[in-house]
Amino acid sequence: MKDTVIWNIEQGLRLSAADISRAQKKRAALLAECERFFSDYDFLLLPAVQVAPFPVETEWVQAINGVPLQTYIDWMMICSAISVTGLPAISVPCGFTTDGLPIGLQIVGRPRGDMEVLQMAYAFEQATRFADRKPPSCRTS
Image (cartoon, rainbow, N blue to C red):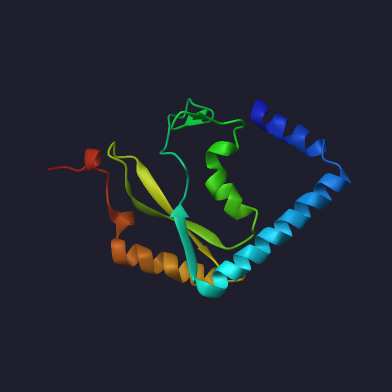
C-alpha cells in the first residue's frame, strides 16, 4: 500500500468514540447549513478540484499558490468537503486551462436531489458541448 493510504488508515485507527461523536455533531451542523442553503438555491456550482491536472509522477500536490498543504487530502478539499455532506454531486467538463488541461465543474444538489443533479449536468453538457471539445493543443487545422 502507498504511504498515504497507510497514513489514512492509521489516522482512522487513532480516533476514539468521543472523536467520532464530535465529528458527527459537526457533520450534523454542516448538513443543517446545507439544508438552509438549498431552501434558497437549487444548486451549488464550484470547481471540481483546486488545481489543474498534474503529472502522474507527482503523488500529490504539496502546495497551492505557495501555500503548503499538510496532507495529501488537502489538495482535493473542495470535493471531499462536498463528499462529507452526502449531497448528490457530479463533475462535468467545463473547459481547459491555457495549457490545454481539462477543467471540471462540480454540480451539487439538495438532499435526495440526485435526479435534479443529473438533469442539470445533462442540460449543462447539452448547452455548452464542452464534453465534445478538444483542448487547443489537440485541434487540427
